Length: 530
Figure 1: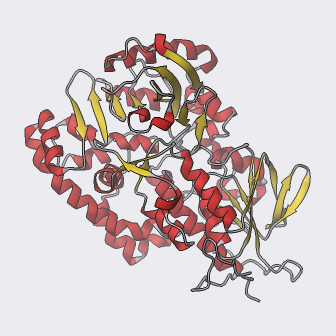
Figure 2: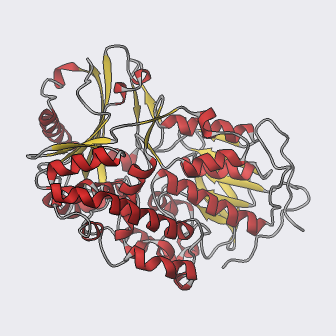
Figure 3: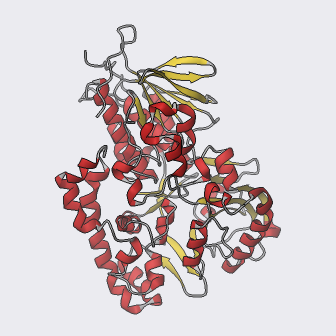
């Protein structure tokens, strides 16, 4: 464990924390620290907040989420807002989606997944009557699994010795760490399509259900137990709300402010280099994409455990081919969320892992205009299409050139959409934007274009993942999908709580008590202990 940071000088009585990136983790950290009276400044290279969690607005009146399109398990961000004196429901409007999504199995039946157990059992029975009875035991088991693993996810995991902690040891019988999601589901569901209905969610981690650790059966459980939520105006509005709350608490957000490097004296952080000048700070939180930013911002000599070779050879998630389509006309027959699972799903997965562009890709289609008229002009639809494809590093081994591939793959994807009854789509397109793995890497600063960050295999989880308090240096902290506890919005928000608690401990900050900052109140000038 690193030694506590030295107290700032009397010339700067308030602790100064610089945050690199205004993504969900950086914004959550800013809220939590500003509420303690810390002098927080976020440096964001783009002209808007949110990182991948932003909403794109076009001149034609369409709105598209860049990345996440729904909100899952809002408990964590609700608690963060509540801790600073506001409420999630006062900042954004959430609408629970039912059915959760439509699962279209190519060449087989479609089902509408729902949190209603009676209806869901009936949907499962359409695929396999015998498997319907496995739904409630699956939910009960994963409820217990989440309860036992939550304390592990809510705390730092800095060393291998943490595995010996009683709460970790208690969780192992339920977690079955050496099993996979698909194998674990086999205890409840015999039919491969039913297992797929409860395991395709591993794509949120950029992983295959046939390799992903069995812990992550909790992903589909969270959908059924806590719902899938649409945020009116797009998921990016949660980022806007977080930025608004952070600024009300006194944080400063500097847009168009790319960081050139983190400054050190020896192994101690002294601030940032921004626009050719030194910006002093007592601590720095890096919310930029780990694989992209770490080699650029921190000298390799200061990160032997994550040197350039280890970062380069780490295992990364797949990437995504995105289409944002403004369409003339409405599609009431489409679900709000549709997942098309190809008939050769396992082959599809093997192609992704081998760096091969799928020839019959699965895909996800978002049709938010169905319930949110703010997402498109009257009589129009804003369709969002996501297709998993190999990340840039894996694809490079196969000689993939996305500049050359894009027109062909676009045609293929539109042909695949026709299987959902959208054969006339191309003639109705009034706005189109495509984002390829090249764009994720080169324009959106995502390492290797791996949209879902580092894979969550057993050798890249817990103590084997980059830690919230970055080892080997003093004053550098991490938050985001590439950091413990992992990716996905609720997990990133939880990571922000871990990171800020460690930072506050190291700076000797007083804990906020009854007099702590609330929205509309006066922020106490909390000082580091001396």
